[in-house]
Length: 148
Image (tube, rainbow, N blue to C red; front, side, top):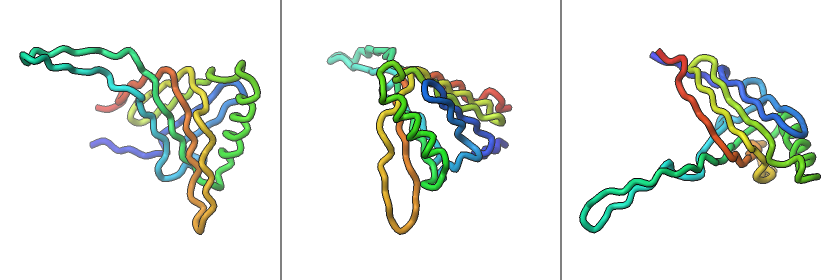
């Protein structure tokens, strides 16, 4: 029987403007982080006579979503990194984002990463979270390297 815990995740966002450690101890919101592809792996067409045609898509781009508590010091680090990268195109789109889970053996590496937009800001009864989105030009996942 497998067991998962967020505390076994280590995530890093590095590139121009510094390196930010995420995962356990970063003030992550319950919703954590999400990595999602932009495109399907492939497409299937069915001809009028029922013959199947598959198309394999080369696109491996996607979106990384980082969710941290409003009071997390990570928000200041992320906003500073974004400000630095917005100052010049020379600093943009060169980041690497990676997540490793020491128990499951999952390793996800994202390259050509850049901030997509600044977190929406909500000030309400409860503090809530900030949600940061990044574009990733190339996502390479390897899941379950340590699962027996």
